[in-house]
Amino acid sequence: MVTLAPRRRVSTRTVALIVASSMLMEQLDGTVLATALPTMARSFHTAPLHMNIALTCYLLTLAMFIPASGKMADRFGSRTVFRAAIGIFTLGSILCGLSGNLAELVAARMLQGLGGAMMSPVGRLVLLRTASKAELVSAMAWLMIPATIGPILGPPLGGFIVTYTSWRWIFFINVPIGLTGITLVSLFIEDMRETARTPFDLVGLALSGAALACLLFGIEMAARGAGTPVLTFGLMAAGIGVGALYLAHARRLEHPILDFRLLRFTTFRFSVMSGAFSRIGAGATPFLLPMMMQLGFGYSAARSGLITFAGSVGSLAMRAVAPGILRRLGFRPVMTWIGFLATALLMADAGFRPSWPDAAIYAVLIAGGFFQSLMFMAYNTIAYAEVPRPEMSAATSFYTTQQQMMLSLGIAISAAALAGSMAVRGHAAPELSDFSIAFLVVGGLAMLAPVVSLRLDPRAGEELSGHHALPTPAAASAIGAAAPAREG
Image (cartoon, rainbow, N blue to C red; front, side, top):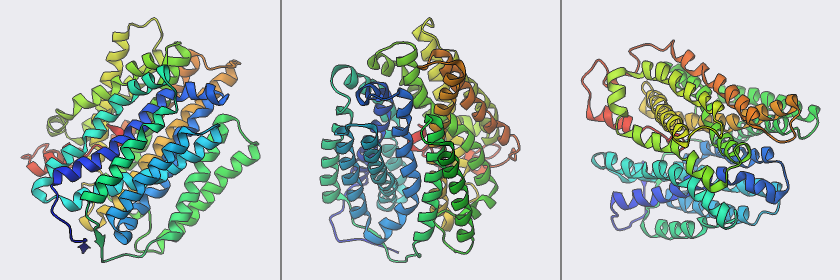
């Protein structure tokens, strides 16, 4: 049962725009930062390759704390948690802008990640609890605005800021947005709480967070050549060990923080497995492509940003036609044959050279963004086809955590592949051939996704896609609202 403090009725559209504005801030921050990394590396007097940790530490913090977001909102009130999340994200942005070295930036980015882990999920929860069923489709349409606009505006905006001002402004621009958001949340958002509470799995949160942190930072250290081999492999071994402890702990609880029993649902399991490989490629691209354009091509940050946003344009074009494609083809063909095509276009990035016409690069990126986003929409929709409503919240937490972890892993693997190629070839700085190898490595891993999907039942998810059945408005709505913010 949800209770809320008395307050005048606010329109669902107003609530949706407030939530969307906070998500836009987060979306812009991530895509702007990717374009700015080479310039920030020069400012910190560090190798550009080492800057990948600025991206992965944020995604790792999201993965660690997103599972706790719903419980926090239920216990302390959605307005309280949402407002605090925006405040923490804004404070982290200020500290990022004031960072004097990479270690300070990493610490500030993790603070941002703590805010982001609460901000987006709780914002969605606020909207779901505010909107009536009749208003939900319209509300979700408003909510998807930042998922579309953020990745399109981010790279050109980041390139402009870095080229003509200081990279520190990519973080400082969040301050007025954050302060405005805190004010609007205080004025217009209800403080909803869940009176029927389930026990909070604090031990599970600590164990799962420690396992994820040890594994990813072990891979990070291997990629950057930091630390001794004993420390690197010790961290990864500790991550595996703590992960095993978590699994033993979770089996004893009715409501663990991450419930692996959800994998008993066939469509959920296939979506998790196939999506894991695909997200390795999706996570690597925002790190590799701006680096390739600036360090390999010699482009300015501004010119790089004007090229790398093209994938988001393809994603935007996909939204209008995705329900019809899924209805005509069904989920399995999209997850397999469209998956093969999307991954082949990702691997085509390995062939980019300065001699290519800009139009050809744009064509590959736009087509890749279109088909990759269609593939992810299929994953994210079919995942919940068999999940009962009482387990939907747990499934969302599990799926989102896995999503963020694999995006982080994609950055770490691409950085490791780039460093490995440089070491084998004796390159002191990354060259175009090194970027090509890194793209082929992550593309090869991503190619396993459609291979896994080949084993999916051809009729899986028909009630959602409308394939071989009469489409329903509910099915179309589920497909249209399924793509998450980070996958366009």
